[in-house]
Image (cartoon, rainbow, N blue to C red; front, side):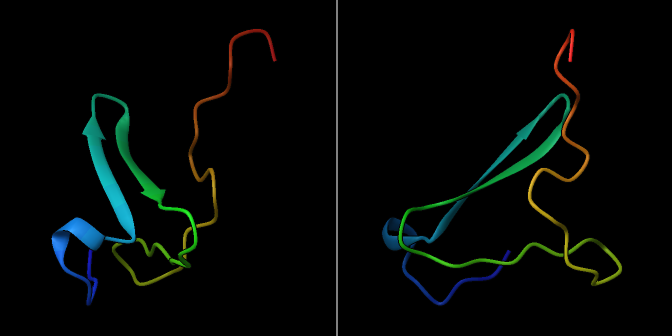
Length: 53
Protein backbone atom coordinates (compact mmCIF):
# COMPACT_ATOMS: atom_id res chain seq x y z
CA UNK A 1 0.00 0.00 0.00
CA UNK A 2 1.24 3.44 -0.84
CA UNK A 3 0.10 6.87 0.29
CA UNK A 4 1.67 10.31 0.41
CA UNK A 5 -0.15 11.18 3.65
CA UNK A 6 1.08 10.99 7.23
CA UNK A 7 -0.12 7.85 9.10
CA UNK A 8 -2.72 9.77 11.11
CA UNK A 9 -4.17 11.16 7.85
CA UNK A 10 -4.09 7.87 5.95
CA UNK A 11 -6.77 7.64 3.25
CA UNK A 12 -7.21 3.91 3.89
CA UNK A 13 -6.95 1.15 6.51
CA UNK A 14 -5.82 -2.40 5.85
CA UNK A 15 -7.07 -5.34 7.95
CA UNK A 16 -5.48 -8.79 7.60
CA UNK A 17 -7.72 -11.60 8.88
CA UNK A 18 -8.31 -15.35 8.47
CA UNK A 19 -10.45 -14.87 5.34
CA UNK A 20 -7.95 -12.57 3.59
CA UNK A 21 -7.27 -8.85 3.46
CA UNK A 22 -9.79 -6.02 3.68
CA UNK A 23 -9.01 -2.48 2.51
CA UNK A 24 -11.28 0.25 3.93
CA UNK A 25 -11.12 3.58 2.08
CA UNK A 26 -11.79 6.47 4.45
CA UNK A 27 -14.51 8.99 3.61
CA UNK A 28 -13.61 11.69 1.11
CA UNK A 29 -10.74 9.77 -0.47
CA UNK A 30 -10.34 7.95 -3.76
CA UNK A 31 -8.30 4.75 -3.90
CA UNK A 32 -7.48 1.91 -6.21
CA UNK A 33 -6.43 -1.58 -5.11
CA UNK A 34 -4.34 -3.75 -7.42
CA UNK A 35 -3.59 -7.47 -7.31
CA UNK A 36 -0.05 -8.89 -7.43
CA UNK A 37 -0.12 -8.66 -11.25
CA UNK A 38 -1.00 -4.96 -11.24
CA UNK A 39 -4.60 -5.51 -12.30
CA UNK A 40 -7.19 -3.25 -10.57
CA UNK A 41 -9.39 -5.18 -8.13
CA UNK A 42 -13.11 -4.27 -8.11
CA UNK A 43 -14.97 -3.46 -4.90
CA UNK A 44 -16.06 -6.67 -3.20
CA UNK A 45 -13.54 -8.82 -5.12
CA UNK A 46 -13.64 -12.39 -3.76
CA UNK A 47 -16.04 -11.35 -1.01
CA UNK A 48 -17.53 -14.49 0.55
CA UNK A 49 -21.19 -15.08 -0.26
CA UNK A 50 -23.55 -14.58 2.68
CA UNK A 51 -25.25 -17.73 3.96
CA UNK A 52 -28.65 -18.17 2.38
CA UNK A 53 -28.09 -15.70 -0.49
